[in-house]
Image 1 (tube, helix red, strand yellow):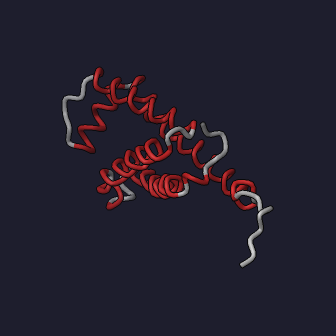
Image 2 (cartoon, one colour):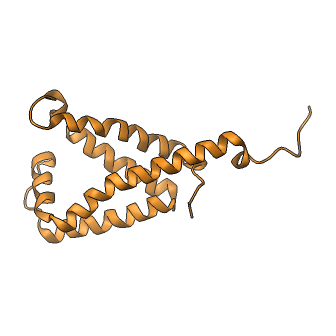
Image 3 (cartoon, one colour):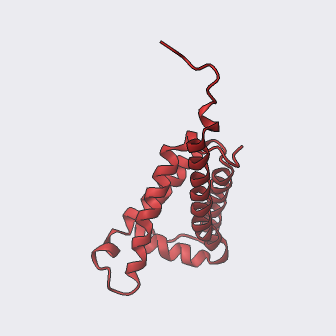
Length: 144
């Protein structure tokens, strides 16, 4: 059996370079979308309370809880955008977005009521979160 000792590591092949660019762009775009929700917890904690009541059936979410959730998510999102501890941060981002997508299920049943059609944008983002988690070992650009 012939082996090519001079073959470049997979990270340096043209396809790996292309894939790593796509994954970087996915990571940055997911970060931007999810950071809006993180910032919202600090700017409008009452909105966080309303979301928890309407979608999760959890009432009484105070500003302090919204700030705490925002701080936890901020730490996760910074680790995520830096590509730090990918198994953990990418997995948590996938889990958070999966939960928010699934609890919105009633909105998908009535897409033309109100602004419900906007909820459909969560499905391609969920696929992107899954792809990034699944291919995390190939996400090598701008990571620590």
